Picture 1 (cartoon, rainbow, N blue to C red):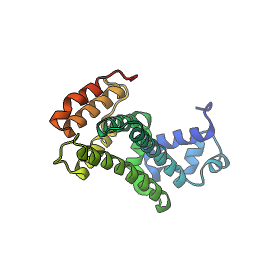
Picture 2 (spheres, rainbow, N blue to C red):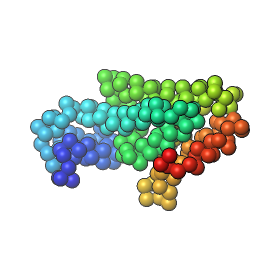
Picture 3 (tube, one colour):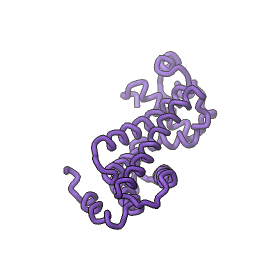
Picture 4 (spheres, helix red, strand yellow):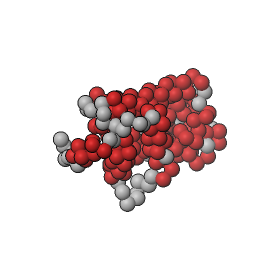
Length: 208
């Protein structure tokens, strides 16, 4: 771990300690000692333990939001957009599993000045999903009886729970799990007449 940049060592150490002992069970002194740095090194990178916790939350939420925005801009139909958003959303739980575990355990301790920008990004992500569902209904691709809000929150809640059971060493890769989620969700929202076209999209080569 000593070969990593100091900031990364501090973050990795904090993630491990917060996950095991909780935010209030870990002091800056302990993070400093176990990341093989000094208090000066810690405070050069983070103003406080609160800012460190904020960074742990912000890095994966920013990634998820950026990927959702990219998916929306890269595809032209609601079906393609929802498929791509769900895929990238699921993969976050592999890339940032420790961050997300700490988030759900410790987010209540974020101070208001740090919680506000996190909540704004979470709301922006949610609104992208709501927009795609709404546009899918209006375009005739998704079932007209769907509630935008209930459907959107169901998708977010279902995927979010991945952090509780996902095992990187399990029988399925994160790519396979992401494809399963995307297929499952699309078949829940698509109109019957759209199923065949959606399957052609789902089964096309990844390079297309």
